[in-house]
Image (cartoon, rainbow, N blue to C red; front, top):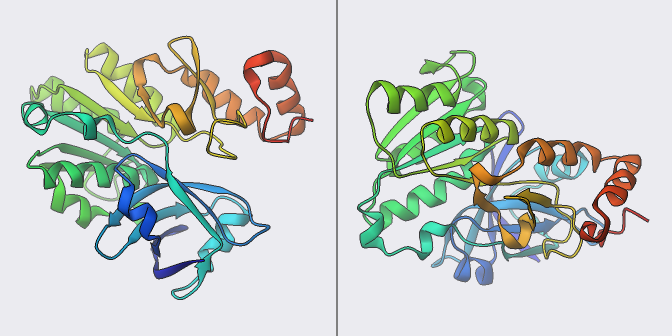
Length: 293
C-alpha cells in the first residue's frame, strides 16, 4: 500500500497528492510517469510525475477529474492509500541525458497548457537545480483553473501567464505569447518543450515549425498497461508506429501525426471504434488491452 501524505485541491476538479513511494522516488526523473490503482478492482490510471523527494521517499502527482476513477481518487484523503503505484515508467526527459555545460549554452522555452503545467514543473525545477534558467509560458482557460503558479515562478527564468478569457495576466492563447517573444521581442530559442492538451501541442508545433524552432512534446494518449503490450497508446511519429508508454512520452513534435492521434483517442473509447482501429492497423495494432476481442 502507498500512503497519501498530502491531498489538496489546486483548482476546480484538479488535485495534488504527495504519495509515499520510496522506490519510485529513488529512481524517477523528470518526464516519467506512474500508473496508480485505488484498489484491486480499480482502473489503472497513468499520471505524470509532478515532483519527487528522494530524502522523504515521496512522489507528487497532479490529476484532473475526468471520469469515475479520477472522481474516486479525488475523494481520497491524507492517510488513505493506493493499492498500486507503479513506476517510474516511460523515458526521462531528453534534457536529463545532456551535459549540463551544454544545456547552459541553450535558450529553452517551455509551453504548458492546463494540467500540462504539472509535468513541465519538474523539468524546469531540474534545470534550475543544475544552474540552467528557462523561460516558461503557462496557459489556462481562466484564472480559476491556473495551477502551480508560485511554484513555477520560483524555478523559471521568466514566467509568462496567459488566460484564454483574459481573467488573469494577459489574454490569449499560448501561441500568441510565443509569437510575441520570438517575432516581436526578438528572443532566440534553441528548443521548445510543449506539454498540454493534444490540440494545444498541435498548434504550438505548427507555429514553431514556421519559426524553425525544434520542439519536443509529451504525449498523453489512452494507456492501459504502460509496458507497450496493449497498443492503446499507439501514435505515428515520422511515419513510424511508436507507443507513448515505452518509446515516449516525449517525441519530436514536428514529426507527430496529431490529427491521427486525436482521432484515435476518440475512436478507442467505443467498442465500434476499437474494432475499426483493429481492422485498419492490422499487425501493428497489438490489441493486448483485451478490449478488442
